[in-house]
Length: 290
Image 1: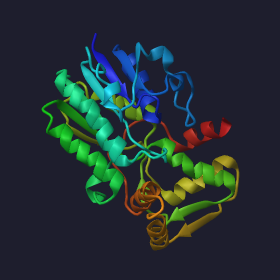
Image 2: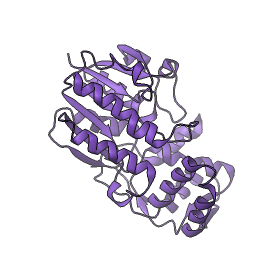
Image 3: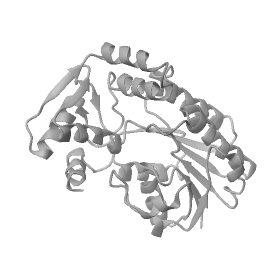
């Protein structure tokens, strides 16, 4: 039986990946700072997965002294570790780059067979943005490590797109720019299947999106439709938001970097090869019932 380490096991994608690896017969070791989260359904409908975990490894990716034995006996490492929302004083460099590198260094010492990492679609267009730079700096480390690897590049998670539903519930959705840029976001369960598939294939880089493509305006309309509300949409010029980012940066660089990433990606089409069967409308409907 192959053994897999899953870093990011308590996150949106990580939980779906735990479930998929276990479904396919792997021994699952889950890295977690807070194991309690493995027992809970997440805020974006990610499942409780404690029953699918064979072994919990308690550690912190930013503290390498807690990770020394993390890869003992492990064949495959999967990591979706990264900051997706503001988390205290930790930076993208601390987590997205160095945290993953701390795991990679140990994986290399233990002769792990393969390292699977989730980065960002169209990263080459956004290299000047801190979150992208940090993740791609790690991708470079991974490619130079000598370990067989796969880099997964999803267009966007359903969990991130749920922000449209949250705004619609508050009464108004704010779009950045015209609202005509396109994206085919993907459900965590569909993406998890792609992630596990990479164990057996030879592709080193895989770009992937969900089955349906929407404009951001259409996503807003779907959110209001699910709620049974008349759409109220405000379009904010990108230059105005970027101006706000510059004002925020001296006081909170981490937050400004995250907003800059959101603004920039919403000004570009994010459409990758389609896969999966989960639709955004169905996801919003289920999320609205919670």
